[in-house]
Image (cartoon, rainbow, N blue to C red; front, side, top):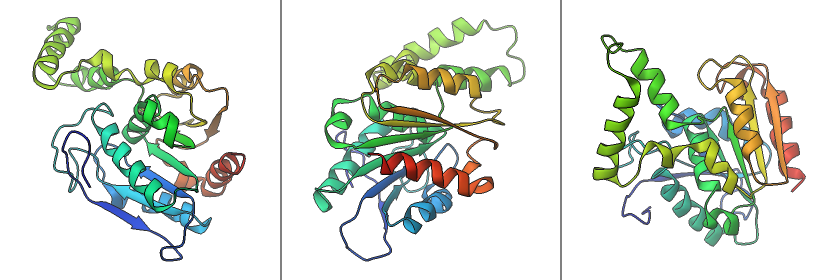
Length: 244
């Protein structure tokens, strides 16, 4: 499949009934994973009669673009998949469901005009809420960085990214972007999350502009709700979608 910026990537389709027209879930994995990591989540949708589309994020698996941008460029891949799903099942529901960095991508896409016109719902599970904050965590964990002022590092990073890629950290503030998200939205907060902190995920949820939105708390570690609390997780997701 080809995104609007020319990036090409494969998409994997799953269905329990061949080509039968059904609602479609587009699933987005997190950092360090690939579409295989989404198998437990895909299983939840398949068990409930949905079609599933998965893909490798940029910088992962078979996606040709090596650049990871926490949803800024990746949202174009999602847009291409949404268009594909709509052509196949034009009268059925389309939901975008992302986890961790995939949740950030889902949130960045949800803030676009294309999403408002073509997607019925978005689900963000333990979403990354800020590219800069995630970068800060990595930077501060590195050796011999304590004498380098972090604002200076951010300024250098912004200059490099703007010059080479056309965006800055500010453009990938996922929480801030939710002010433009008018789509029906479910945010899943993992209460034991030490990667995407629960209070930060709550702040992201509060910024969602859509009136039809829901925050669900799952007593699990980062994105492990679908495994450790499968029944509760499934019930929350399916009830949210059935109310559409």
